[in-house]
Length: 368
Ligand code: SF4
Image (cartoon, rainbow, N blue to C red; front, side, top):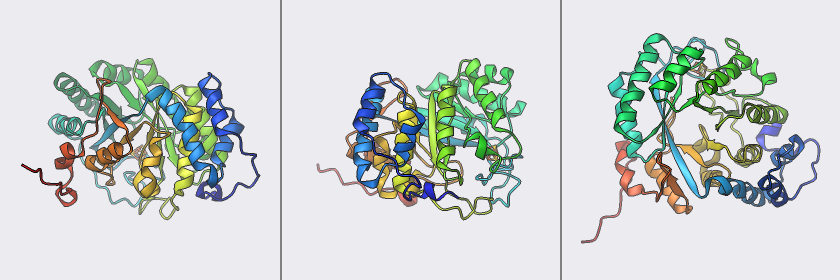
């Protein structure tokens, strides 16, 4: 595991640039170089607020103070034939996840209603598979068509590797965006996955794009990669010209080959988000899985480089509730962006009932 990813001082001193001048350059249409991006990852702790402020200028230029919430739906859980080393849904690892059939169309539509009630902009249906079977595809497409007819919410799917025909069917059924992460650099990839290649992943992103869907493609910080691997990932995504970049932080799962890997330090996680924002100034940049346990009390700082986040937990792990996230957004003076593009205030009280009973907040009693 690279010590650099644990926030220790860089091996080679890097002269600190002016983060504000770097933001000026990007706002004037310039692209950051690899060495400038490297300097962001090595920024000293004293520079963190200045760096976040510079990244926020880029975020604000394209996204204002808007935050979009995304909800993940685990449409088919576990028993995946692939061997991604970080994933507890792989059948190749001693995994606590059991096999389940794909959820029904009714269950997927009900999940979309919950996401819509949480004021989510996007609902993403995910299956643990190498690629979608005919049955998976039929179910996801039927759910997509029904959801689109019933509510205003953007739809994403993450179903593994695609063919052109499958991608075209998803697009014509109402799937707006397809997620398929590169996860890490091409160089580091074979230490993490062996059952499909990094190039297979790139090909699926290109197939989704050809079918007219938006592309969501990011990775995981903390897989034992080096700083150069992280830079390779950010620049490969720029080359692919993806529409959305989710940045996850490893939450090492018991029973996986990465069990026991240390968490990324919060300061490094924020610098990584700033680096992705500088390399992708106009992209929908999401602080994704692992944010709660990695950033802890610094979670709100992630909204200065990132403009979106998941709410209501992840595929196999719990996370912040919609109440928590509405409160965080409102407290920091941000606002929600809906699928319509409209910006509305966050309303924790209005979504408190969506929390599980054990985590339901007690709200102040209204005075009559
Ligand atoms: S393809 Fe997806 S579900 Fe399957 S092991 Fe990899 S990350 Fe997990």
